[in-house]
Picture 1 (cartoon, rainbow, N blue to C red):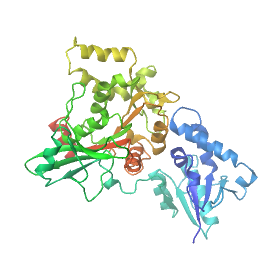
Picture 2 (cartoon, one colour):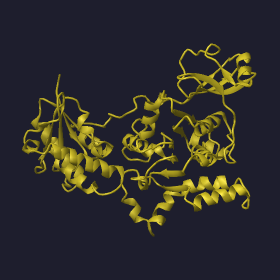
Picture 3 (cartoon, one colour):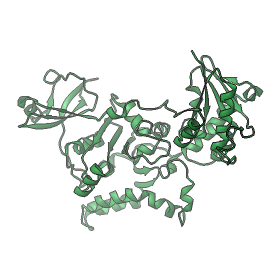
Picture 4 (spheres, helix red, strand yellow):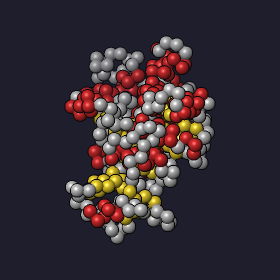
Length: 445
């Protein structure tokens, strides 16, 4: 088997600080330029700052003379890791990349020297930057994306809902009886149902909404009718929205993901459900990432910190305004909502601000989750304390993060890995309900 040598770009480490342990028996080389770039990212509270610090600590454990002289073993069954110092620009590259101060060009230069040195090996530059990968290929260097945490088939990602046609009228009528349940003998689908999977059952004459929900006995799941429940003045407009509300209100489900394009009501339903269940939780926290990769851009906005973050948080306040508009200004519901804000029982703030916070008995909504890495999503969930419910909403087809895609973002990974868990539910909202114009634009533009 032809052994490989992987050269890692900075953004791979900022994406996953444990990446060096995911290349099996192959060797890894870290250009010294990458360490210099990591030094600029060590300070800060963003997840990329955590990855920079964590990687440097991990490298420090291996820090012996061999790291710069032949490499250090990463453990049994693993390859070696080494750091490669810079050299003058290779004669082959001097006219192609004249700007030697550019970090990407310095990394390419080191990679080019390594490819000449290891002619009997397959040398691959690993980067999440598509431009750097194209530049590498232009000088006949192999280049790949870091795909360890990829969802392999995002086109067939779990939707959380299935449609059953030609369902018997007798079975549908059973769901409308007092118990509102079907036993497994009455309905045994060819493809087994996932826990908390939703169903649209119909036969041309009658239809019913149902879910495969945990029953009264241990490890028992039953098919139970799902009602079209309103939450804090917001009424579901289609079957999938009804399913979303059901999952959002279900006290046995502590993790919910809601995906869908713009205008499908993801954040609005999540916020309305949180307000409906407010008495069961210590606090409602509505949050979203400010800047996908770096916090530098925010500095260009005028004003103090609150003024700088307001444009990023405004969509969340817009959803809150929609809910408030359902009630007269002097009504008890309107006043109660205002008191939640005044007493900080309802908080809207950037995701970066929750680091170090105790997430106990909270209803937490993470908006725009498609712009989070799998590691960021894991970090959020593992901080959940007793009695906390976490909702992730987002559109996996609308990613702003420069180094994430439909098969590598945290939301896709979460949906793919969590399906089948008893405390998890997912629903993909497919129909836009914002307006006819918004739906038209979303579908054809």
